[in-house]
Length: 423
Image 1 (cartoon, rainbow, N blue to C red):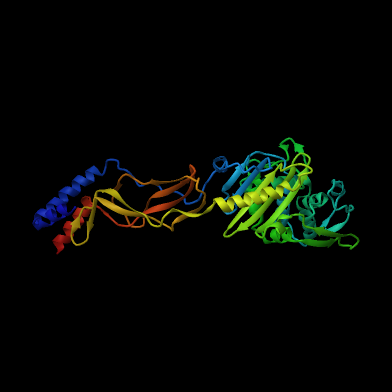
Image 2 (image 1 turned 180 degrees about the vertical axis):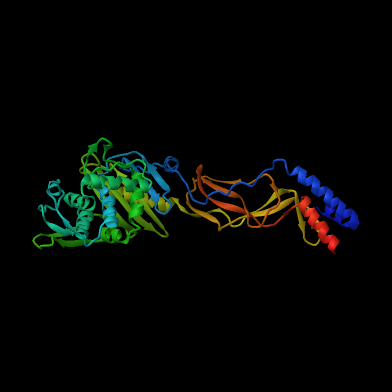
């Protein structure tokens, strides 16, 4: 570059103008041929597939559960999976979805009138009578603390007009949350089957639903309550409710949870736990049958201990990274005229971090053009830094130009000659 610059400036003014015009004409001709264009900017959203992470983490924890998952609640990333995407009956863990739908589609002060159909639900049940009236919020406490099946149906009928209509809302909401292998039929999780299959979900889908639920303060308030006393509006029936989520008292970081049991599902549990700056959601399906109702607490503690021991915050890609991209047909006027052979670029944004284990595999790829053609402006997006975690796109940052280059063609040369002549 320096040699070209010195030679160019030593020419006499007249020769220099003629050479510029000639070069400009030649460059204009060559510019008609195809050239490599800048790469499109990659999106910066993380897009990790559930299958990859479920298959990657196969450490054997000797859990009792037939299916289990531990998920980073913020990213949705699976930290541990055991048959995490296998559809299974899930019993009363279904009620977390029933509760969040009621909170989003109803008013806690709504008056719910109990139907005859709701009264026909099997135990565990409140045992109210048709025509009894309750505030919706009181039924939600009955739903989540005592897991009453009749309360679930009363809530569903109030929100959607029927159990079938409410099931449609359940499946729609699950799909919105990215649940790919769930089919909900009943608001209480009782074993059921229809033309779409059996009432079921996966450990991972259930964990995703819980991650959504704990963003709602009313949901947390209800599910974290130790006890509650509720009555019908006439005051003729009073119920003392106790929370059966024992993990709340076992572990200080426990945020929320819901137990479940049916003959098909076995003992189940879905929970949320806060550890430092991270929140885990986890689910256990088919975690024993009578008389092993405590297996779910052992498995829960083991999953949380595994996460704390295995994962930590780490830097995946440092801050700004600089590049030089080969450059064609460019000219720059600074203290003279030069023809830069390359142009500077850098990544944007802060360093990329992740909640990682020693076994996680990181690969950083750069989607950049082999060469660029002027004109170009500083700040223009020309590519991306793509970060892959265990073979799946985890995130990306844009790569932008840090310099400006003019196009060296006939128009530039003519403009320069006219400016020189005017001087």
